[in-house]
Image (cartoon, rainbow, N blue to C red):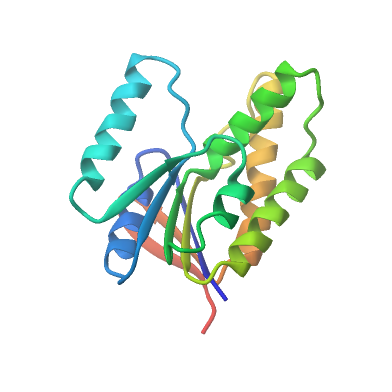
Length: 181
C-alpha cells in the first residue's frame, strides 16, 4: 500500500524542491514523472533546469503528459515516485480534449483524478504529487481560464482527500495541512 503525499502551493513557492528533497531522503529506486510539454524555448530551459537539479541524485525520468494513471501502473518497480505536476497534467488533458472537440467537465477530471488516486494507492511505494494552488487569486476574466481554475481545484480536492499527507508550501516553508498516522 502506497503512501501518497500531495504538495501544493503557489508558483515559485518551493513546492517542487520541497517534495524532491523529502523524496531524496528515502531509500529506493526513484522515478520523476514529468508532465510538462515543451511549448517554447523558455519552457525548454525550465525543463532543463529541473533535470540539472536532479542530475546525479539517483533519479530516472519519465515524461508523460496525459496518461498518469498508466504511468503509475507501469512503474511498480520504482518505490519512490515524484509526479510534477498535476496542474500541467490538467492543462494537457484539457488541451487534448479541446483539440478533439470534446468537452472537459469537473466531473470528468474528478473521475480521472480518482483513477489516478486509486492507482497511486495500489503502488507499493511512496508517491509525491506536486500541484499549484490556483484558486487564491482573482476570478479569471475568460470562461476558458475559469474552467481551467475549476478543473485544477477539483483535482486538488480529490487528490487531497485520497492523500495520506498534504503539505502547503509558501515562501519555501512547508505547512502540514493533513497527516495520517
